[in-house]
Amino acid sequence: MSGPPSPLIENYLRETSFWHVATIGRGCKLYPKLTSALIERWRPEMHTFYLPCGECTITLEDMQLQLGLPVDRSALIWSVQFADWGVVCYDLLCAIPDNIYEGRVEIGWLRDIFPEPRKDSTEVERIRYARAYILKMIGGYLMSDLSRNLAHLRWLLKLVNFRAVGEFSWGSAVLATLYREMCGVTPPTKAKIGGCLSLLQSWAQFRFPFLHPRVDHPYTFPLITSYVGIPTVLEDIGLLLDQRPKAQ
View 1 (cartoon, rainbow, N blue to C red):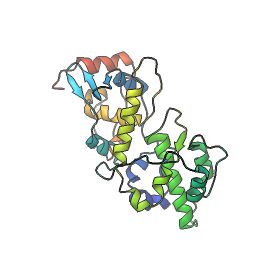
View 2: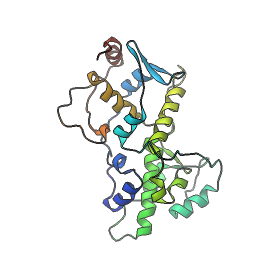
View 3: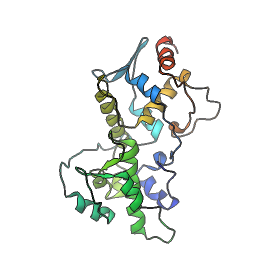
View 4: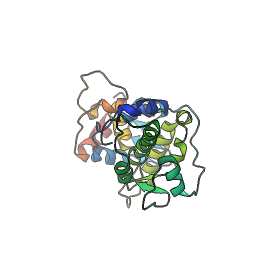
């Protein structure tokens, strides 16, 4: 994300359960070598990371602690296969992009069309901005595809009523997306991965403390903002993961 959300939409983000993840902003640097080391140990048939001392995986509890998204509410169902996406955009955002790619819009378009609202903006304008902001988070950060620059408008259909939005298990959907992306990138011919990689990285740093310098400050919520610095060489990360006894 480009930065923290506008205070003018804080109430909407809290109502939709996206407030905690929105406050992360630019606070999480990604380390591709750690992602590679973990993917090498991912077993799609079991949905677990295989280590010499045993197996482990990311749970719904981890998901909630790391990102602060709900995991125990109604399941998100991708029921819409096709819609007039231009009409959807106009009805919910009052704007239509020049290009819609199979139901997806460019995140850059959302950023350009919906700048941060002014203090004298109307409630309707703030609601539209909040929808665009959440859509940017979903498409560019939480459940990104390989492009990392497109957001599917099916998520916009879930943002009609903010009170109803908060009743969905968004955390479960984010975790399921990451699982699917990790399974899809395990073949050696695959090189790109989507999904919330900062969740994967932060989970590893929390569950494997030997991967990062000792955290000498209180943990913050969501946990994803608590860490800085890890080994940057793939071989070093691999050795740390493979040579630790089960007790560690």
